[in-house]
Image (cartoon, rainbow over all chains, first blue to last red):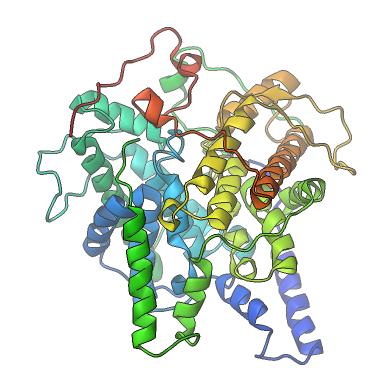
Length: 258
Length: 258
């Protein structure tokens, strides 16, 4: 991925313009309400306090049965931070992300729990324009972790479906692949209570690991394993080309000088 | 997808509890600041005024060069509504969604412009728990439109790269497939200015059609074409199984009674 990067000078320059504008208008700490609120949500990193991974996973598991995978990961983290910190978590509309279910409205694209985890890391740590790539790289690390893990790694204290839950490796962050491999291994349908509970436990698993990484970051000891795969493959892609393409992996048009 | 649905009674019941709580506390219009802000962002639908599709597409095209596909679609709509309406658009942290670039941090999953469009429809119209499925179904319609369209459909007034832009049909909402088919047809690399401008124009194309649908919805004449594919295929999926599976499409485990 060879996108333009905002330089640190650009970012600081823009911040300076805003500060100068506020000073010129004599507003000081009394920006108009809308601008003050916007500034609160777009001031990164958002204040974070360490959370208990197991407790977060329990919340995410139970929230799945209300708002499904994506919104459940977001709300499991943000509902606690709303109580412990307040804003900007209190204002964020987590429930709007129910549509992430089933890989976005049942289309089987990115697993909603992965999308939710990326929304959380990028909202808390901030986007590249805030001066750090850590939020994006931590999100990417979550996608790789999800692809490699025997999921679900988390089992709730009081499972709604009491079974020995089969575990599978997706080798992909996509819902269609992850759910499909599990359904095949478990021989259970999409509408079965076992499949539903499997996805609720996967949601808990993702929330658990997400909070482990965020806690490390808060402690200043987070070393990212996240990568931007498009930088290596000449196309936006997962790293396991042959799983879908077999032995006939296309060669992307080679890089040309700009 | 056979997920549990919150009944209308549940939703109205919850609203009633909130209203009763506010009345009991004698707060009326003076809820504590955090709760008031949260209520503003989670009160659906968000106030919408009709926008000009062509103007929105120009904004999205140019924003691509700042924040890439996903955040550009969001900001092209929300920046205008911030000026015309104010809250809750002014507070929403659009820039946090830069990570949607390249199908989420370069992984090639859902095209960021599709993810951005779904975030917009679900934030404005609201999630299922607000009493309507229209936001989700309009988002799903965008995924199908994107899959079927000869993209890019939009050409900017002042293109940053002055070329006759090749157009391709992705038959998929995924970045890897959409970008890959275009790169093959155009024989251009991922890092080329032409590929970059193609994705900026696709972003404009998505923003254009998104606003057409939202304007219809505002006028009360929106009839959704959106579907939830998992309801038909026994798995979360696109509808064109053979494109990836060839003639060997697996049969999902059959539905079992719960």
